[in-house]
Image 1 (cartoon, rainbow, N blue to C red):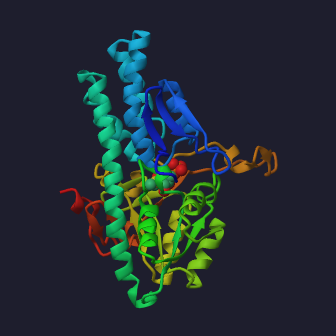
Image 2: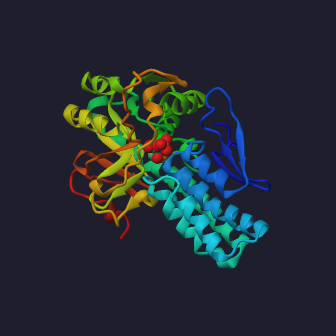
Image 3: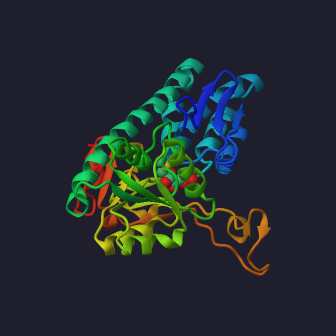
Length: 346
Ligand code: MRU
């Protein structure tokens, strides 16, 4: 992704979002000027990925403030608008955390709100850079017995790159760091049904970086892992419970189970803003159920019989016992071995 292109950017015309529904064929910017348009963009996955919707939500508070001034809202209307942004998607905790952080500065005016939102954005990029280094060091050490000095084959699921964050990426940031060190042989990018974040977005980012990769069907992942074709899997997260259970894009738990069976590391890379200590365990995480048409149709054409119903959970929960390592901007925790996410927040 060219340096100047950011998934989420504040401009004098409001919030500029790369329309991720149009990628990889068209790179279009959606200018968002009001709260309805932002909520719609978050729900339609124009902007997506836990840290990116956190950053969009942070700037959304500024949009709400501006719109409220234009339209003469009272405080109750303003707070209701901010809450609508906060609730636009339920699973990624980053959205609520970032909106709440910026909302605290509402009374100080637009300058302060924008300053806080910019800090959210800047800190996310810094966290991703730190994760890249920690994750790459850990993976190289952990796979040394198996891979020796040869570059690694890494499997990933969904999109966790610059598009999914304020910049650089989480799991894909670790992969980019490994690539810069000359230690990537190939990335296996799961296509990520039904909205193809892997085939459309991860592959687009990998291609832009010149990182060798294969796109594979989600259903191929377990076989690829069990045949010994990859050294490790690394994914992002939408919410990490206090016990290490991790919600991420649907299909992730199957990858983790296959890694456990094959005895290779299953690694989660996520900033500490994704850790939610108020959620005790994965079963308490609200999993977004999306519309049936995303499953029952293909490119707008019905593929399932008219009588069929669709079941479309957007995320699943990987038990902490299957998470070999959690990489945050503070270092690496061996969750399956008993280290807890809270150990990084204390
Ligand atoms: O529905 P999406 O595309 O927003 O889901 C995104 C994921 O599940 C990502 O893996 C997660 O948010 C981490 S992004 C760094």
